[in-house]
Length: 368
Ligand code: F6R
Image (tube, rainbow, N blue to C red):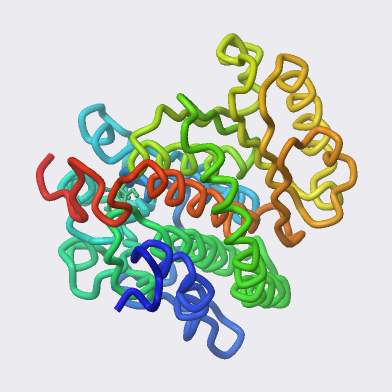
């Protein structure tokens, strides 16, 4: 049942191309992006003047990626909030606020209560959910189902990637409604998304090499993860995976913050994973990251660099190089997350832990 794999998580990691294709299917019809259950009018969608994204854990990291896409494509301000914090302050919400609630299970208590709070304040709620008929989509004004299929591993993998794709679809639906993108531009972006399952399949060819690296790192005391732009949420997700599976101290940072404190943590031999954007697509951020890597390398860190194929600039700074397909920066989390999932799972396995059932964690968290 694990499809010949030692643990479900690896099977689910390998199912990601299919999960993405399934999530995209049926959402571009007659040249238009369509949502699943839209109980709000197109006019309501057009009137949106502010977006909140609320979620927990990995789903929150997917939400951080949404901010980059929605702000860029729709010219709408987006705030991303942990669901457990959202309703205990006093967020400014009204009927023109769109709250995007992301939840694999659709039953997470913190997210559900945040949705209820938003609706009481008359905000519209759009749910991104992997479970048909769960409570959060039932209480929402529109739904986008991720069709990642059931996840057995407690740690989110294919659901996470599918959530990111769903966020892009929400961004394109808003851009289409608001007219910030012409129909042919929406079609072009959708075509880029349709190329992503294939790109993820190509990353999967590196699995055995990444597993070997994981075995080498299994005795590390801590691992740091650095990224910029959409690579920052990927760094946070890589660190969360390592904490929850391998019980290892791990932290993700925005690379620009390094000099404001975390650089003090760098010592001889400390593994530091750096997520690089494509030098062609985002040369400005690429250059900044190269200078961050050179700073940590000069202090003796062991650099593990996730970089686009043919990135010759970063090569001299990488003690270990993991190559991913060169894709547009905004979409890169779909490929750059995959090696981090494999790395965490393999480190956990090498340390003798149950990758599919990490201690103290439940698949669905129905208490606040
Ligand atoms: C991490 C993980 C959790 C969930 C979080 C939210 O691998 O699985 O952090 O992402 O508990 O769960 P959902 O998405 O079901 O609301």
